[in-house]
Image 1: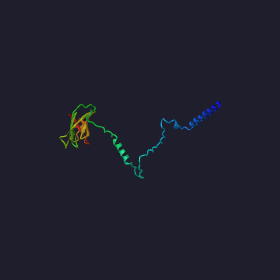
Image 2: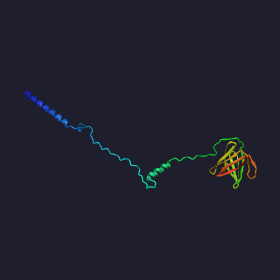
Image 3: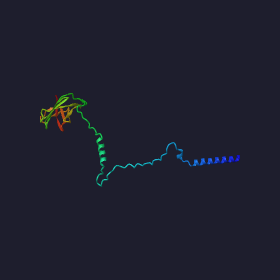
Image 4: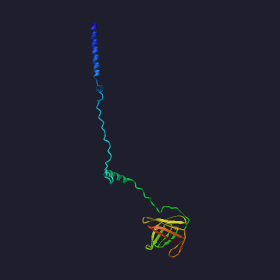
Length: 198
């Protein structure tokens, strides 16, 4: 009787172990995750299309290729925003070196064909012509080197300058002799003549 009970118990235990092992074999990975995080299927990767080059028009032979309006506008904008080079500013009244050995500060000059003349000091020049005998009053700056002195300035937006060189000069009409030879340019016209210190 006792042996029979032991057999029944052994059979029951074996059946229970078999049932547990079968249950373990039938479990899936999602059973282990039950009650925790819910597993969602992975979304398929989306491939982005390759970047297309800007639209270009192929020109017929002998003609230049053209860009679309957007590219042309972008190119024009880029060109417009580029800084323009600055023009050099000329200030004729800026300090200039005066290393001239000429100590005189006032001169009277004349010239022929066309007839012209000026009276000048360190700050102002009165330039006259046959047509304008009252002359133009022109602010000037003096500079010089060695046996030359130069008076320069701006008239009607254009730079001018007259240089007096300590070298004998003879008037081409009167034959009068002077101590200085004058060369200069004003309003696009070139002038040559003689001068003396006042």
